[in-house]
Image (tube, rainbow, N blue to C red; front, side, top):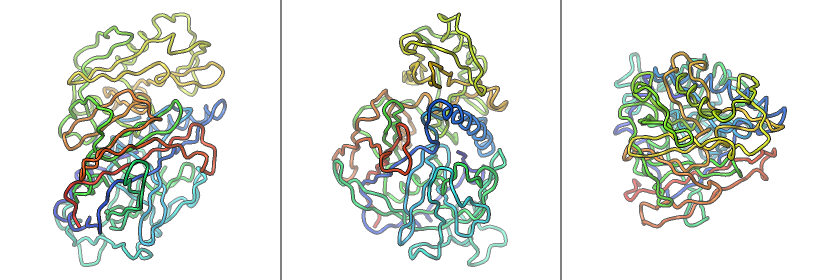
Length: 489
């Protein structure tokens, strides 16, 4: 999904956050169960699915561009996965909301009771809930004369008078929009108190109450209650909790597209150990320095400008996107190297995807691609990850020519879930590094409790059997929040 426009991307929560985020008691560790947004399928259903995901990526290009004036795009295994969403609870008494999990956006917002063009039904079969600030005893509207609003907009808004709400408006490049006002209320989640043990936990967060949605956000097709952003800006839930001393500004995800299941954790991962590469400074997204690309152990001879970082160029890690987009020159070189030993393969155009028949194991017949990053960090992408099955021994190529998706994004290497799945990916914003390692995402990791130093085992989960529909290899993630040593009480 989309980060907000420049003025909201630059939101800062200074001293006001310390007042807005005070929560009674300690927030130990927490769990969110995350599901796929797009239902999985095979055969004809799979064809419809990849079409929807391609459209999603196109929209994402526009949204990311509009928000940060950068050409971006792309996410997962099109016939089996899509966007991911989780269940959270807000207010007192708590009510359930389904929100999209997105590392590419910076705020948590949910549809408000006063929303004029919000979908009333979801094509996902979910029961949508509208947030009502007046129905929550712990909720309050943020007024424009409060410190939070002044910090958000760099000063008091013109024409602001007492009791006027602090409004927000996000306009996306594809014409979608969300408009509303900020509120503060209780966020409820399951705290992890030991290996496999949880108890209810609460924190106070500031989030958007969406009063009007436009474009795709107003559609019922894949409707959810809102978006939970895990971007770097100070308005994200992660940043707010970190500013309040609740958590470390570190999170990790492990998405399993082989067996299903996965983990999404906030906190310091102590097992497995993960090598990292620096994040590019002063960038609104998770930008990294790509150094070279190998296909089957042979380094591609690419011009130096392909690896430069700057405005409308560089490499971005974005788990909120479906596929992976390469500059046209890189795309052509990678495709030539992949199919070098298969000159006889005949390609078919399936909804603008390059597809082909192959009766054997793609892992045995095609090369591994390795992306090399600064500080000698490698990202291995295997054939079963960059190809996806589309029924009847048909495989489609997940890599996309970025120039065909967005002319503004033609020089961007955008790495989505296609290459991030089946890896533990850690975003350490405390030290401004990101890292990953090949991992069995159906197993477990260990997260350190920063208060006690105790490592807790966090297992992957699959809740498809308890869901309304049977989701093929349904992905469920655990979002585990670890407490910091000095809690604000």
